[in-house]
Length: 235
Length: 235
Image (cartoon, rainbow over all chains, first blue to last red; front, side):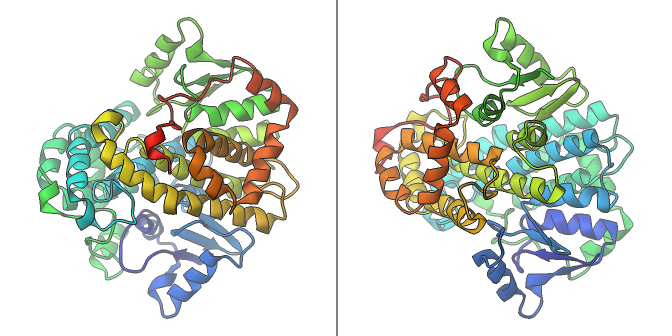
């Protein structure tokens, strides 16, 4: 099965959580919108000739099946990529954790867009500053503290204990992105969540991930994605 | 199987999407936190003796299994309550739609709390006004227009065509809540989404739903939940 991933071609964004899973598994896939004519193909699927159109990227084409929503894509791919056990109990638990990552990512996005994606950052800077102060003071420590607790209970080093999963890849991406966006605040926050940081370190050493991160397939972080570095928002 | 639903006892909130499914199916369940000692039980599970603690309510106990995240609870309950077909393709499609409802509900919540749930509404009123103007002008029509398109493609009256599902119940709840919160804006918006309104009307006539809505189990909308009526935010 050669998967087709549809996502914006110039940002890591939400698509990156799927890319990391495909890359770690060594799964064959096309990053469709980054190929010639790909944006037109993506737009055509969004404007909806299909009977079951996705609401927004990312979405994945697996044979004739089209699946949207990052967490659902990973739920689907998990057992197929051997990044999730096949039992219903474990699949539901990982999906639940991934949906909490989804909530976290939305709040990370809202640090620069608290009033909605339709506004320019420049048009809501004071609002972004207030949102971010609360985010760095309360929300980020709460989410990361939750995952720290999950890792403590699992016995580590991963959220399932000794078994690696796609949620560990997503925690890696959260830490990487947050370090890019808020390097100062993360120095403080990371002190309280050593197990989450250890997951990040383990992922960074995985062979296929090392190769991926050094390849042109890994887009750099930038100020169009989820994780944006605006120094005035950092502590 | 007698289900145990854990959710805040004084609001409809996100728990209501689960309540509607349980009620429509006539499934036996306890609304735990609304019973004596229930809040203590809910808190105990959140502070996490369990090996796999939920991040936040709502969560559902089904035998020994604990499932959190509204959309995941419905994904789990769907086939068991006969509110979702058993095929993987249909289950994934409904879940995808429900996750889009989840995104919509988050934005509905943010109309009164754009800077984060930690702020009082009174402390971010101008921000709420700016957020809501964009929400009512662009976001709500976009989400509801998406579901209108899904209903058009399904042939109606439901998102799966002739087969009723839990997503239809959630669309009912969105329309009911939005009518409560933004009665003026909804008059305008509803004109563009007649199929979504028809789903709402069909659900409002379902026998168990009629009984439920007239019972004390259905909490009234109020200014502590997701859908809040602040007249100054309406058009």
